Length: 265
Image 1 (cartoon, rainbow, N blue to C red):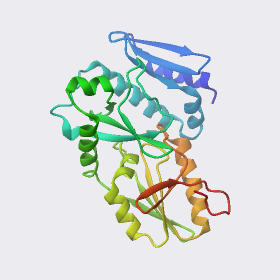
Image 2 (image 1 turned 90 degrees about the vertical axis):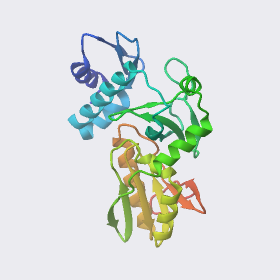
Image 3 (image 1 turned 90 degrees about the horizontal axis):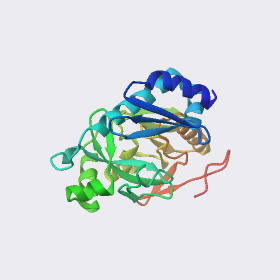
Image 4 (image 1 turned 135 degrees about the vertical axis):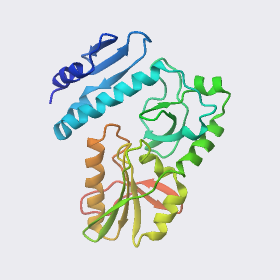
């Protein structure tokens, strides 16, 4: 589907009297703004149009829900103090925006060459990324934010589904709570998986709502992992990275998987 065609579908679903929708033809971006607050968000239509081919109405439903909840959250005044149990780390790609649309830096720390750790206040059906102004207003430090978020992360479910491909076992964590990929930051989970696997432990976070572990026991395992990771990466609403990682000695190293060749780190 062409971006202009997707634009029409989204406009039909998102148009309301209290909203202003504007289209940047050069960037293929549709901005949805609340007239009362002047706040809004922009949707990159190029990436979404490619995903639409596979997911159709389901993708539209997810995008519309995401926009509705984000605009709703922007109308409300949020506080960190008293809501410590609702603060979580959020994994994003290394190319994700480093500041808000108004130029305020987000609070984040580097994770790998491919990923960063941002922080969010969970709002139930959505969450809001924490920026520097908000952090300072509440009297928090980045260190305290990091510590609280990691503690909360360790309390999340780690239940997984498994599948076997050509003698290699794959584990999928997909609760759709917004923090599936973030569980890659749970060191005790990674250590547990490292002890359980028979071969080499690979980990992938292709998009926000899935974490994949792979017990690689033969060459076909690498190929299957590469295909799975790229499939999820291309279909996810919030993609993170199409490169899987090898986990060893407590470290994550990105790997480049070539067909019929063992990956290079």
